[in-house]
Length: 123
Image (tube, rainbow, N blue to C red; front, side, top):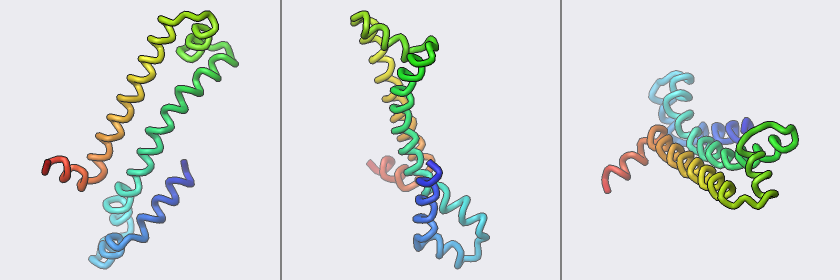
């Protein structure tokens, strides 16, 4: 995550609008906080949204290995016992959480990038 954030920030700092902001006389801190960071945060937010799926999948492994009670261990034992109603319910909850996470990522895009807000308002 740190390497991805660093490469996104380096890429954004090389863009012409950053040079323009510096040429207008803005401080380095102002350029980074107002211009570079919101634009570099868009791919980082996308990565965080994708990582949520692996977090849920990893919960099943960790909870099974350490015998912790939780949704991951419940789905493993339900599959082993062929309890289809519980498996379907857990998968529905996981799917709903992924949909909500993707929706929150899309809302965050609108907060970070004003160009995306302008496109949706025009249509």
